[in-house]
Image (cartoon, rainbow, N blue to C red; front, side, top):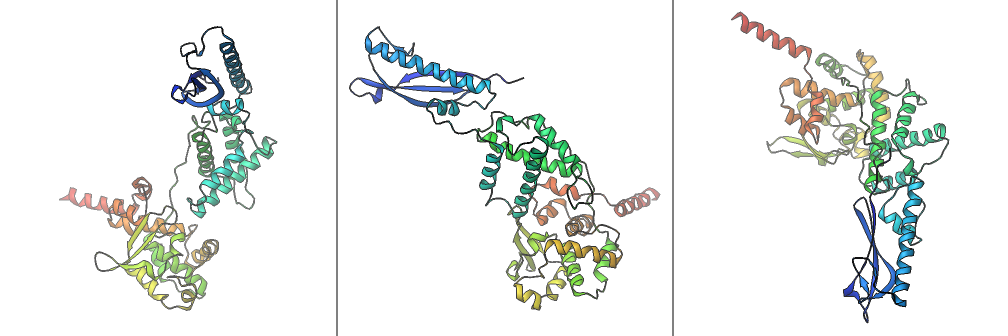
Length: 407
């Protein structure tokens, strides 16, 4: 059922803009509480104007000309409103004014909105986030072409049904080269990005109502994998014969003891190592993703890796603190590293950040507020994902409890 719109027309004059007793007449259009004013390009003798009737008084020739003009203007504005309403198009005061003045542009489309969103966020989003939005809009375009047989849709056509159809399409789509179809959480991420684009259109008043109003994301809770102490120790002590695997291991272990992500790690230089308030050396940088400052004291294991590559030919060339390897190759080589060390888990570089949060800090009693700062999180709720209770910790706590009960 369509929501009822409020629409009103008011004619009024600016007496303080009168010239030789003639005052210009203006129109005010109001739709759903939002209004615009514009000149009707006609003047009336201020002594003839009746503000209550919004017409000229009397039956003089001048009054009849003005009132006939206003009657036509009123009828044309009503016609503009009805035309939009019958076609189920977006209705705003600005659009009715543009139609009346003959300035009505072609209706905005989804592609117009995507283009505007990309231009608006070009210098504010991280490169990875921009890539993610590109993937989502790519799936949107594929969905429109395959399921709707269209290259584009007007924004007025966006509704809950289209959102549901797009969601169903993603659940049934198997990306080329992927080992499996999209997971529940991946689909929800695409829908969330779509929602952000559409919400922008709503705030711009390109869309009359938000089609995502009744849509709620439904994420499946997942456990983030990390290395346990024994696995991390085995990884640290393993002697690799290949230099590339040795470097990959070093980068992973460095992240395990600093919590620094791949994007932030590859941009580190010697300038990022500074004396902290405690007189020891810290890594001071900003997260590429959120621009949040990150300050991490350098633990012994991380310091050893930094010293290993100090004045090393591979870092001298790139002027970086550590060897620079692309994210794709890094995660590819980590599979070889895991196989060599005997780690059965699907080793990815981001797992190092999880290991830092879970094994290196939280399980050793570091307060979650401190861990949140070290990770550069803007909300502590994000850090709480890592605050899991480890089986070993449960065993230790229960052993203490048993001892107390015996006493």
